[in-house]
Length: 298
Image (spheres, rainbow, N blue to C red):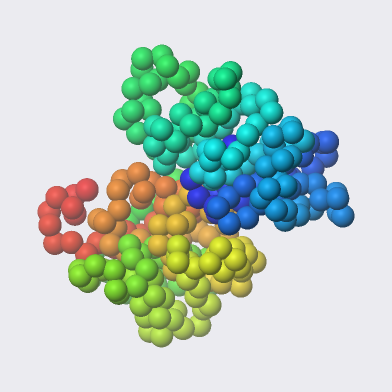
């Protein structure tokens, strides 16, 4: 199973460990920064960190029956004994050659399951011409309510912060998404994670714990932040687009997107999906910084 980000790959690994824990199935995790194997020899109920060379030996010998990973799966060093089934999650995040590379790991072409919530034109064309069979999941899990989405003008920003505070008072959590990590990126004045987290803590949500998440953090730091957010030690997570896929926190019911016009429609759709993880009513607030009519309409 190949996923586009380490966060998502780890999420899948954790889920499949739970699914298969009662079966004699070995599962591996392969990303750019870590390798894991389940079950551990020391504790059959836990996964353990292993060396990359050892994991690749187990994959090539067939000892690991199910391998989850990022783009690391398509490296030449990764050899399979009998690859029969491949799954691409968030299909639209991979290029055509990357998808092709996983399918051509062996002489025999494996079965392919390709999954996406935001199909790109090329994917739609493949289904129209019959190169891909189509399965539609066209309903939400029972009890889910549509996300209430609001485009927030500058004049309504304070009012929106109070709406977010009302959710936090109920014990919920929130995401704030910014286009940049810090002020040094580019010349335009665009909201960034570093400054916005400091502003929210100092002027607006001083009583709540605020964390930050972005791609420049070390993998261990990113993991620690997400673990604290899951454990409700962080109330508001200010992040870049790294939370677009693979983040599953049912208690987070609010997402505010700064500079919303700077993200694509597919990205906004994915962001909104972060808060549709429970039966609780969820909210998505789009803060725009543009004065252009076209961007405002979009």
